[in-house]
Image (tube, rainbow, N blue to C red):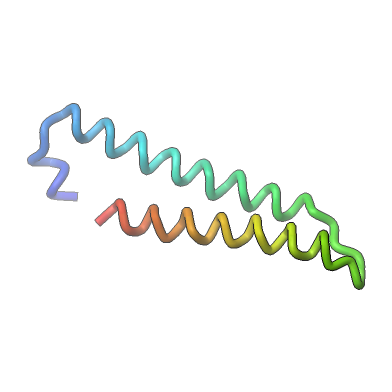
Length: 68
């Protein structure tokens, strides 16, 4: 990341902290999604699992955007 190499040290640490937080949020949401056991026909649990997966995907997109 050449942009951060030329940036002030304070900015670099702030950026890295945000990237780490996004990564941790992604992992957390994936773990939460995997902990939801979906039985056949249980739409509520299926929707809960999908919601966690969508949150993880959104965080992943934000992480990709921030790292540019």
